[in-house]
Length: 282
Ligand code: CAA
Ligand code: NAD
Image 1 (spheres, rainbow, N blue to C red):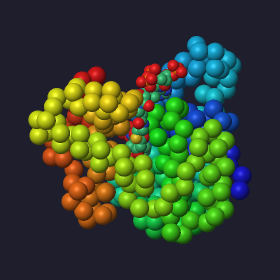
Image 2: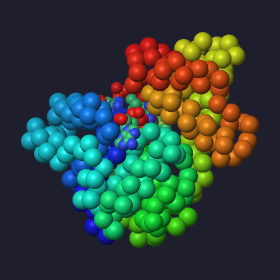
Image 3: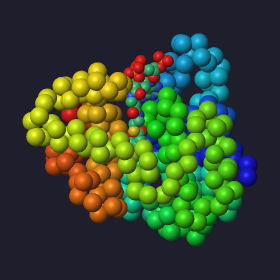
């Protein structure tokens, strides 16, 4: 299975990062978003990241130009007709993802793999929105994509071995490390990480300590590079809430109930770094 043309759905923080690392590895990218301004913003971040690589001597100006030249704007899902693989990185919402996958199934060529960068949603359920569940797979990158080595690869119930192997090979070509995990809510990364973040939010909500103190405890006491509240802002509080809801609903266990303070912030539109305000102001 040869992969050359990659379509990325969603030019937000994850989609932009995925497009960047794929273009750097020599793939041709169609970067799709429903909003032109999101595409423009996403491309500006990619360009800034590449410029930093040039400044640091990790890349020449010519290479930067070539990488950017491999990224094409797409505002129409019909562009999937030319893709060998589609990596979806739109919002963490099952209805949105199922609707995108059902449309992609009609548009993309028969050989195309349909991958989702979902943080927590069951791949099997996303795959069931298509007539090609054997070609649907989870490809979960970590934020910030250009820096983090891990890609969790998640097989749905029907995913073909050949599809798994093609995605594993592609992950290695991106200089990332693939780790295979099973299809359960939150997989491994967010099953472990997100309850810690949610608990940190409860700690703030219950007045146990200030946000700075909570983050300092985890940074200085556990050597985490960021405190959990800063990390939540960095991930996006909407994404954190969606993930907790998926764990809560998926396991039916009250230990995963999202903290009311997290809900309140999301309702207020305080989504973290991307909106300029979350637990901290940016
Ligand atoms: N995009 C591209 N590069 C970035 C970046 C970004 N958003 N943020 C930082 N970098 C680069 C910097 O340019 C710098 O590289 P060079 O100096 O070599 O050019 C390097 O990363 C280190 O950055 P800084 O010195 O500015 O800051 P730092 O040492 O604190 O590192 C960090 C930044 C790598 C983000 C670090 O704070 C960290 O590891 N934080 C935790 C990240 C994490 O846990 N990610 C997982 C989130 S959960 C997830 O992704 C799954 C999910 O489904 C929600
Ligand atoms: P984001 O809000 O930064 O970006 C989402 C982008 O998708 C936006 O630009 C939006 O305009 C676009 N979009 C929404 N609906 C669309 C559609 N129907 N078609 C095309 N584009 C559409 O979000 P993000 O942080 O990049 O997260 C994207 C996905 O990646 C989510 O599923 C999330 O759970 C997952 N993820 C996030 C992180 C993280 O740390 N933020 C880490 C790993 C995985």
